[in-house]
Every structure is written in C-alpha cells, then in structure tokens.
Amino acid sequence: MSQYDAYTRNIKATAAPRDVEYRLLAQVTAALLNARDLSAERRRSDPRVTAQFMEAINWNNQVWDAFVEDVGTEGNVLPRELRAAIVSLGIWVTRETALIAEDKGDLDALISVNRAIMKGLNPNAPVTADANSETELRPAAVGGETSSQTFDGI
Image (cartoon, rainbow, N blue to C red):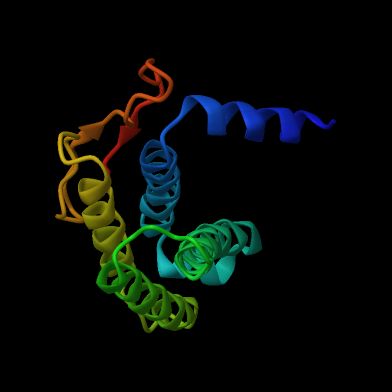
C-alpha cells in the first residue's frame, strides 16, 4: 500500500466530503490569486512565470473536471438540478480557462465562482465573493481540527 493510498483512506474516514472540497477550492483559489498577481508582461517575458500562471489555471480546471465527473457518477446523491448546475459551471470554467490562457478571459470570474462554491460548502466560513477582497480565511475544520494554514486574500 502506497502512502497516497493510506492518506486517501484516512482522509475519507476522517473528513466530510464538503470539508475536503472546501479545502481543495481554498488551495486552488489561493493559487489563482497568486497567478492574478503575475503581470501579463512578466508572463510573456519569463517562462517560469508563465509556467506558474498556467499551472494555477490548469489546476483549477482539473478540480472542476473532477467535480463534473463526480456529479456524473452513478449513485451521486446531489439533487438533479444541482448536478446540472455543477456540470454547467464546469463547462464554463473550461471555456474561461482557455480564454485566460490566451489573455482574453477573466481570472477574477474564476476566483469569484470558486468563492461562491466555497461559501455554499461552508456557509459559516468568512469567504467573500468579491475577487478584490483581502479577507483572511482559514479552511473548514477537518477531522475535528482546524488547519493552521491561512489562505490570505481568498
């Protein structure tokens, strides 16, 4: 058994799916915020900055692809309308990601969508839908413990 398998089994046993999804979105949104701070001029002139930017937007797209795949699996207990909305958002994220990669899309829109979903996953968390907010956020408690990692600006 690999360490990853042990971790996966442990996280499934100790964390509610909503908490895991919330934390994942918090992490990917933090990466998007960092990507937003990279100027277009620096992205064009420095391949490492370009790679960092692309990694962030592609990671976000992969997260949304996983959400879409999950709601399409047999036995998913979410209401049909919610599953359809998640699929629609996932399609939009894919399109917007392609536009952003071409410097034509709106990175703040991706950030806002992630924040809105985070708020739905944990209504008590201090998440704002304003992409320009500098609110400090601590991810939801998982397994009865609160993470000590802080996600600034989410």
